[in-house]
Each structure stands twice: as C-alpha cells, then as structure tokens.
Image (cartoon, rainbow, N blue to C red):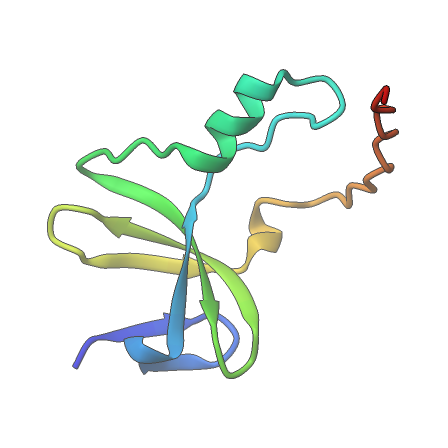
Length: 101
C-alpha cells in the first residue's frame, strides 16, 4: 500500500488522492496568445527527476502541492500552496469577442 501525507489530513492511502497535473506558472490570460495558453493547458514537461505537482485529497477536496521523483515515484514532500502563493489574485472577466454573422 502506498501512503501519501496530506498537509491537512496526515498520512492517507494513495487511493484517496487525485493527480491534478504539473505545477507551472500560469500565463496572464489577458495578454498571452492562444498558442501560449494551449501550451499551458495541454502540454507538460515529462522530465525525469523531481517535479512539483498538484494533488487533491478527495474526501476533503483539499488541493496541495507535492514534490515527486518521476523515476522512482518517491514522494519527497507535500505542502500547502500558501507556501508559494502569498498574495491573492483577482481575475477580471475577459470581454467576449463578437462573432459577425
């Protein structure tokens, strides 16, 4: 049985978690190109070594970050996202483009 330590709930069976994808800086949706946004959403680095990933503890819906070695699948550490995100970002709605018909 593989155990992952949730920063909020402690050690839990890995079956209680959902992988949320690679952690990477989000481009500014207001100024980035469609290609940059598509790269952010759909592509990952797929590197061998230590990567930072989003994980969710399903019973509590708690999202956190984990550092994991992709070669050995060893979970090195898990931590609260507040260690990285120290300021709140408010997102403004993007004006829709009118479709000429």
